[in-house]
Image (cartoon, rainbow, N blue to C red; front, side, top):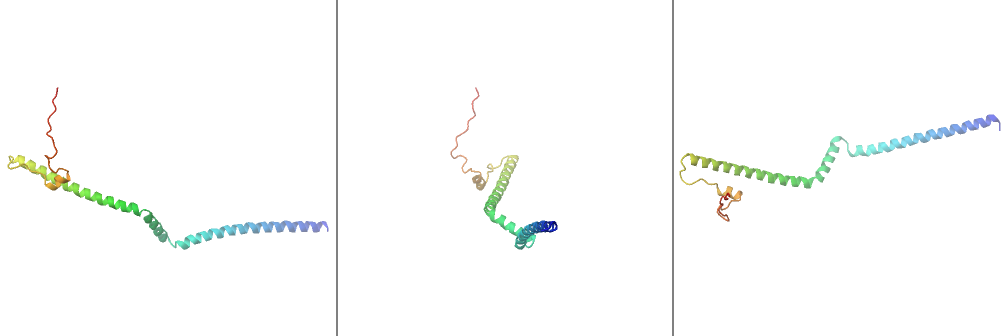
Length: 141
């Protein structure tokens, strides 16, 4: 073989190696691009639009917070009951003190006004004289 033949063979070998390297890099990029498009395709196929994604997220959140939501509803019901009873007791006490003031201003006619039995029961006062001892002032030395 001549020198020209060797040089041509070496150039062919180098160019073939370069073409193989270029093709290998190109296929790696294509595989990566295909993997990304498949991944994006599955996500986009699963959720056609943002509304579907939001519904999916909302359903998952509702599913995981169902117990807490039920507990919160029970607390809200209890709170509304407490508020209602508190306002009823407030109104009853206000009417009682108003009646006491009127009774005192008009010369104390008749018996002293009292709270209604429902309010007394809510306040935990069933019989004011039950299980009580007279309170005596402390003696000062």
